[in-house]
Length: 298
Image (cartoon, rainbow, N blue to C red):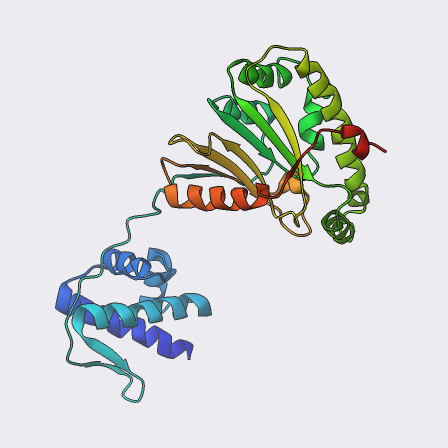
């Protein structure tokens, strides 16, 4: 079969040179534009009879068949082992122009440095939403880091009239038990997940008690939700034209801190932004405002 793939590529290229005067580089770009994986090096190896992997041969052969059919109205005939002309309207296949910008920034290493997180949410003008699982790291920053690193930027938002809403999994929910019992199969420390939520609640009690003494126009609120956790979301002004998200999908069997983060802005990719906004809205729908933190502190 690999010999057949090579023949398709060679004969197809001969036809394209004859009919279109295409060079190898042009053919490669057109095959990539059709959605097939190739490169000038692999294509050249096939044409010159050099060693090529089975996948490379298949990708180039299938791409070649579609390209020749579209631009020359020739179809590959297996019985004849040849391209055969058929009636049809010819179309020009555009050349691949490289990866397109999607308006998305991808952080493949996972959880951001605290400075990058602060830089991101400090742009908020109306609202900041921290939607997570235990929020143990978030609340811990108030006590484990220098005040100017995290606490002061949060207070500055509140001073500016920005409302901050924090969502974490209800520690007594069935969803919490299911999630952490499953997670501990890979990471035994996940059996302490519910305890981390309770620690975060104790931290929030202290944080909000301090804020109650300060005359900030912005308010911080804490909510619990009852859903199987799927992702972390940090939303900045989600209802505004300049809204933006940080989203980290929880990967099964991986530490949450290692899960990649997607940065999405409404102005750059409105379709993706609105998709995340719709998901967040559903997650927040039945969340309960916490007014008594002692009930969660055991």
